Length: 133
Image 1 (cartoon, rainbow, N blue to C red):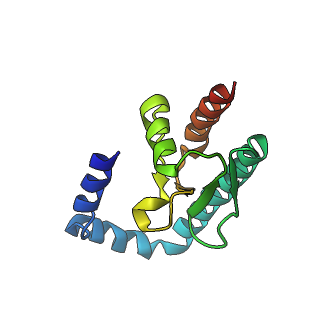
Image 2 (tube, helix red, strand yellow):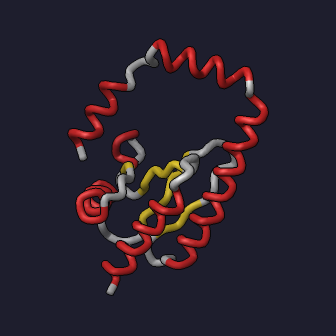
């Protein structure tokens, strides 16, 4: 997990030229792109709200008012970093512990902007419900 995080930090120091060019092209079609992403995020917020209702012993959260990133509070006694390590090694689901952005060790960062969010969430749901049994 630490190796992955350090690689991510190294490779995201600055934007690549082609990425900037693609972003400029995308901005020319701004409104449809924004609307499509907002639909994805709103749908994923609903999926995550349902998930949290199914595992209230494990997580609590507040949906973001803007943007696609949320912090989820981990309610068990396990440090967030250990929980994230377990989910990536045992279930293949990558979550980012709040320790990496100096916010203690009780939160996870999730991104709500991916089209495959529900599929990933289903894997996490299966993992945490199996772990509870």
